[in-house]
Image 1: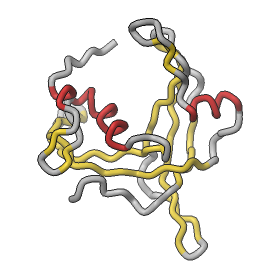
Image 2: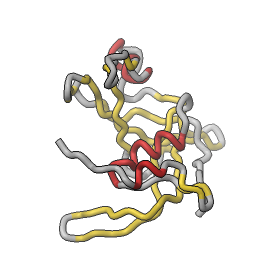
Image 3: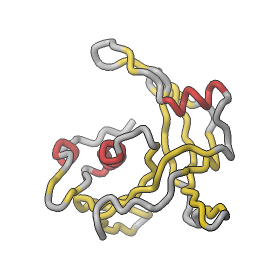
Image 4: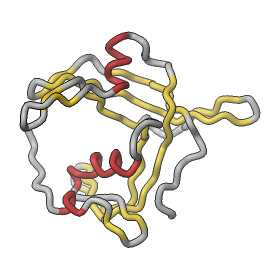
Length: 157
């Protein structure tokens, strides 16, 4: 498999939006996304289960500086994005450092990762942010793109 195996899609359909949630004073929503493609005038929806993305409201960094809200979070809050709407973006699949996925008693080592990335985002940064909790990161050839992920202490709340 090649790195950044981008599906030939440029749209993501919002299939679900959670209620407004809050943790540690930061508002967020979980949204379900499915890749959408156009072929011969027909709209093709992915048969895969939806990807989940978390979008955050404005919050503060460690030094008290303001971190602006995700654009998608703001659009949902304003009502300009809702379930069934589309966003520009793509599904990406990456080769990664190996990590373990647990499912009950079973554990499987994997070395690929797929995620949905909005068109205004850096795909490698999004993937590495999502892989951080697994102590893994995207590989570009033999290059480790986020070595700090590999030594992160995972903190669960």
